[in-house]
Image 1 (spheres, helix red, strand yellow):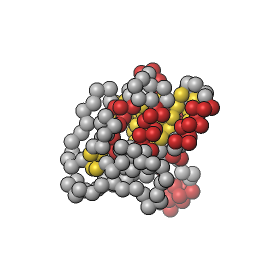
Image 2: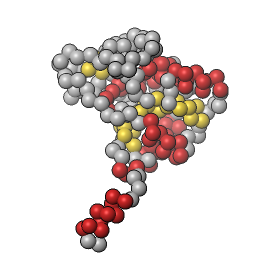
Image 3: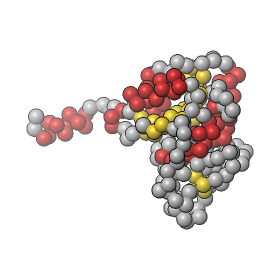
Image 4: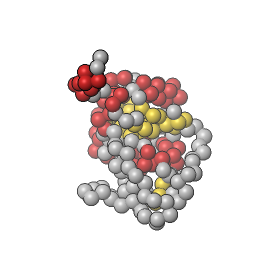
Amino acid sequence: MNYSSYLSSTWMRPITDFDIPEAHVLAVDDSIVDRKLIEGLLKTSLYKVTAVDSALKALEFLGVRDGCSTSLRPNAFQVNLIITDYCMPGMTGYDLLKAIKDSTALREIPVVVMSSENSPNRIESCLKEGAEEFLIKPVKISDVKRLRSYIRPPTKAPCSGSGETLGPSPICSKRKVGSLEGLQVKSNPESQPCLNGVIVA
């Protein structure tokens, strides 16, 4: 094949997942079986995956501890989507969804909730709170591929030490902002979280 033919065949072929930059998904599920399943499906669909076993560890990974305003870690700007189980001990997936959407700094991260229970009230509550979609377990490869349409483009963290805070987007939300509002970027972007139960693939 000559060079011009190669270019022609490249430009004319349909766009596939291989043409889309790798997206980073934060997967949250207290069940090790379900967590490994969703992690495997995401990897098969060419996602980078960080898997944690609780909503609190998900917030800690993003730089939020004990529901208090803390400095965001660079991880918060590298996560393109969060997928979380609904029913988990302690802090539920619904609570995690609310924490994300009530935060000025984190609310733009898309959140997908999954559950083994097909409860209309539960589904309606999550969608009303800002979830992109509610998946019924077991999650299938077709479900995971559909997540691509929700992926948030990567954002740039403010410069370290600048004191810059993350404010709301130009299109203001009417959602009441909770205690997670106004989170700041961690002053030392090179520090990495050291969490038990966190798997980065």
